[in-house]
Image 1: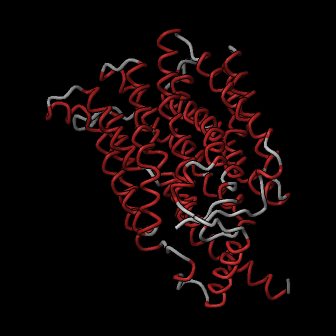
Image 2 (image 1 turned 180 degrees about the vertical axis):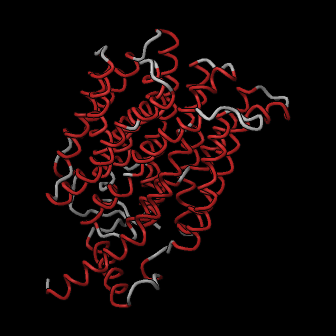
Length: 443
C-alpha cells in the first residue's frame, strides 16, 4: 500500500470513528442503565411494594421474553428503514416506558391492577421497546468499519456496558438515598430522572447518524469513495451463497453455536448486573457505599474491553482470545461462590469482569466473517436474542435459588458451569470456524 493510501485510510477511519462511536457509546450507556437500574431500585422498591426475591427475579427477567421475540423483527426493520430512524424510535419508546417504571404504585391505583402485574407488564413492554438496539448497532458497525477494525471498534462501543454501571451504580445509589420528594420515593425518582437522557438522545440520533458511508456528506469525497469501495471489495471477496436469504440464516449452524456461547456470557453479565448490588448490600454497607463498591467490577470490565479487543485485532487472532476470557469468567465466578470473605468475593468479581466483558468485542467480530446484508441483520439479532433468553433465566433462577436456599452461591456456581461449557465449545472449534472472511449474503 502506498503512503498516500495509508494516510487516506487512517484519516478516513479516524473521522468515522469520532463521528459514530461516541454517540453510540452514549446511547448504549443510557440503554443499559435504563435496563438494569431495576437492580438498584430493588434495594428499596421490593420492601415498599412487598416483592419477594422470586417476584423481583421474575420481573427483572421477564423483560427478556419480549426482547427475544422482537429482536429479529426489529433488526430487519432497522435494515429496511435505516439505523438513524429505527434507533431513534427504539430510544424514544424505551425512555417513555423506563420512566413509567417509576410510577408503578400510581398506575396500579389508577388501573386497579396489582403492583406485581404492573411491574411485570412494564418490564414486558420495555423488552419489546428496546429489542433490536444492540444487534442493530453491531450490524450498523459492519456497514461502516472494515473487518480489520471491528474488534477494537466493537470494544470501544461496548465499553458502555460496564461504564454504564460505573456511572449508574453511584448515581442510582445517590438517587435512592435522596428519600421521598413530592410523594415519590427515591427509587421512583431514579427511574423518572434516568429516563430523560433517552428522550433527549432521540433527537440527537435523528440529527447526527448516517445510514451508509455513501451518504456521508461529512466525509471528504475521496474518503467516502475509499470506504465505500473497501467495504464492497470485502463483501465480494467472500463466496456468494447461490440462494441467499434471511430465513436460511436463522438456522445457520454457526449462528446457533454462537448463540449458545453468548448465552453463557449474558447469563454471567446479568447475574452481576441484577444481583451484585444486593450481594454487596448484604456485606453491611450503606446504599451509597453499595453503589461505589458495585462500580469496581465494571471499571475493570471497561479497561478489559478496550485492551482485549485491540490485542485481538493486533494479533489477528480470535479463538484463543475468546477462550481465555471465557475461562477467566467461569473460574472466578466459581471462586466467588466458594469464598466467604467480602474482600475476596469482590476480587473474584473484579477479575471475572475482565473475562465477562473482555470476551465480548472479540466475540462480535465473528458474525461478520460469514454474514452480510439482510443475513447479517437477522443472524446478529438471532445470536443476541438467543443469548438474551439467559436474561430471563438468570434473574429468575437466581431469585428462586436465593429464596429457597437463602444464599447466592448456587446461582453463581450455575453461571460458572455454563461459562465453562461455552469455553469448551469455543476451544473445540477448528480454524475453519474462524475464517478471515467467509460471507453469506442476504437481502
